[in-house]
Each structure stands twice: as C-alpha cells, then as structure tokens.
Image (cartoon, rainbow, N blue to C red):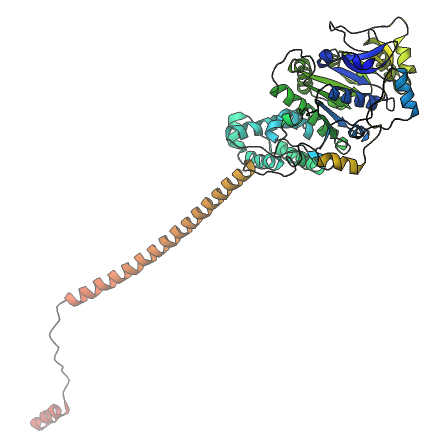
Length: 497
C-alpha cells in the first residue's frame, strides 16, 4: 500500500512513486505548462509533508491553493483514480496559516528595511548600479550613526539626511550624487503606490511562527496569499528570496535529517531570475547550495525548467515534470532541456512523453536511498485529500480566527528609529539656529544702543566741559558808560554860558 512506504506518495507509474523524506532536503522542481496540474501536485506535496510532521511554506498565486484548508469532497472520478493506485482517500484539511503582505487575506508579514538589506532592496526598487551604490552608502551611514531603518519613512529620512550632508559623507565613503538620491526617492514612491509600504515595519516576522508542529504531529502549512502581490513581481520575488535567506542565516546546521525541518515552495520561480543582477544570482545559488544542510528543502515551481539557471537546476534532485508544449524554437529548446535533465527510461522517449502527458500526469524522478536519481517514470499523480479549488471567504476567515498566530502581527509597532531621531536632530538644529539668529539680532541691537549711548554721553561730556571752561574764565570790571544823562548835559550847557 502507498501509505506504508517510507516517503511522500506522489502517484502511480508501473509502481508507487515516492519522494523519500530523508532526501527531500536535496531540493526539487515542479514544472509544466499552465493548466497541466502543477498546483494540484504542489497541494498534495504540501499536505503530504505536513502529514509527516514537516512545516511547509508555499505561495498561492491564483487563489486555488487555499482549498488545502478545507476537507476534500472527491467525486467518482477521483475515487476511481485513487482506487486504481491502491489509495483510500481520507478527506481532511491541512493545518493552514494564511499570510498576506498586505494583511488582506492573511496575517501581515513585515520585516525591517535594515533586515532586507541594500541588495534585495535595490532589486525591489529596480535601481541601477550607481543608485544601488548610493543605497549602500545610506545603509553604511545609518549603521555608523546608530540609526535604525525600520520602514520606508526611515529610508526617506536617511535620503534627505545624506543629501544635506553629501559633501562631508562624500569625502568619507564616496560621492553621493543628488540625481541618484532623487531617483531612489521616486522609486520608493512607486513601491509605496504598489502597496510595498505595508511590508516594512514591526513587528517583524519570527521564523518560529512558520515552523510550528501541532499537537497531532502535523506540520503547519503556511500559505502566502499572493493574488495581489503578483501585481508587483519584483516585490514578490525579493520577498521570497529574503525569507529563504533568513532561513539560511538563522537556522543551525543539521546535516541530512530523517525529514526536512521545513519545505519551501517557490512558485513562479522564473520571476526570481528575470533580469537578475549577477550579485543576486550568486546569492540565490549560494543559498540553494548551502541551505539543505540546515534541513530546508527548496522546490521551484515554474512552467519550464529552462527558466532556472543551470547552476541552480543542477542542485535540484527531485523532479516532477508536467506537460510542455513546444511550438516555437524557444519552446523546443526548453523541451530538450527538460528531457535531458532526466535519467532516461528505455521504455519511452522522454521528450515525446513530456508533450503527450495529460492533465494530472507527470514524469517523475526522485532520489533513491543513495541519493542518485531514479529512472524517470510516467506517473499518474494522486488526488489530494483536501479540496480541489479555492476556499470561500467564510472558510478562510474561520481558519484565520483559529490561527495560532492570531493577534501577533496585526497591530503595527512604531518605535523610535531614523525618522524620529533625524527629525529631533533637525528640530534641535533649527532651534539652535533660531536661538543663534535671535542672539545675533539682540547683539546688534545692543551694539546700536551702546553706540547711541556713547554719542549721547560724548555730547553731554562736551557740553559739560564747555560749561566748566566758561565758568572758570575770570570776569572783567564793568565798563563805565560815556553817554551823558540829560542832567549832565543841562549842567554843562549852563556852565558854558
């Protein structure tokens, strides 16, 4: 019976096909054209890992995957398909926690600007090399001056701060062009208009809240609602890479465990590699190569394996290939790359088989006990135990109401960070400038008053001196008048006669 096998039952070829749990951290790829059954395969893998006690993270880009939180209602066709595999369907829901960067259809996910780092943030903002260099300077200055970068308001405040001190900072760490600062400010505005502001802030996501195992032994299935997020593909890809990087940096080494500590499904994986700078591509390669020793299995979900660089594809040991259509030369090259990635089966031509697969069929090659790839097998994928199709809004609300992280992330925490500190500094500087101007004005007024007082005192002293000189001068005897009085004149006249 498939249930007794030591691994995750994927489906039936000429034998049961399993993905061994102790090889699940060797990563994998699920590929195929739209409508061939990739989402259902992702669903049965996520629920299978959960049943084995392995927490799972996956993105729901179309809304179909949300049905994993509801028990299935298999029809006769699905029951017959299961019976043909020797499988008894047991309708059951997976223990799901819904997440959403915007907080609309799941618990909010946030991180800080500092934690996202300049490399990924430059990717989110679509910056060129020069602008990315300026962004690195901003992070350096913030770190040097002890300024926390928590949200986009902090980043914007740092841009203003660096711009105002560009001459000093330029002498220390390199030129900071005003045009680059203006371009980054415009990119921040565009990111905010896409809803990206909600992603930055606190409380930041704690990884342990995604790596829970319930009392029944099942691993938590973390479903990121990405129906809105897919409208901002750079933000989507950068967020998933950030989360993967956090797992890599925070989890301890465990080697090759009996089963993974976490399985991470990266849907629409081509978005991660479209127009990716070399530094970011190298980071992806490094994380994928080294994270398996942390007990994390990474599974890329995409339309064509050719969407994934060879350096990454070579590290993906477990492969599930749904149908591909090859009408154009580019599609034919992708088909050849997909077929060449499998260990051949002498029973059929791999390239022809890929084109002839029906919905719910796949070519499967997983790693064996020794870690070598099995011969590719044409496999009918098993039906899921949970619902095929989306959950209703009421069902989603019920799951969120019973969530183990309910209430932990909904309220935003706004502690003192770069924006507040720089605003306080600017306020102090403005006050000091105002005080200095007032003191200068007072000093000028005092100087004018002093000069006027000196003039008045000098005039007073001058007048006083003149008065004193006049007072000290000797007075002359009174001059006798020579003018005759009428009596004297009459007397002289009598005497003459």
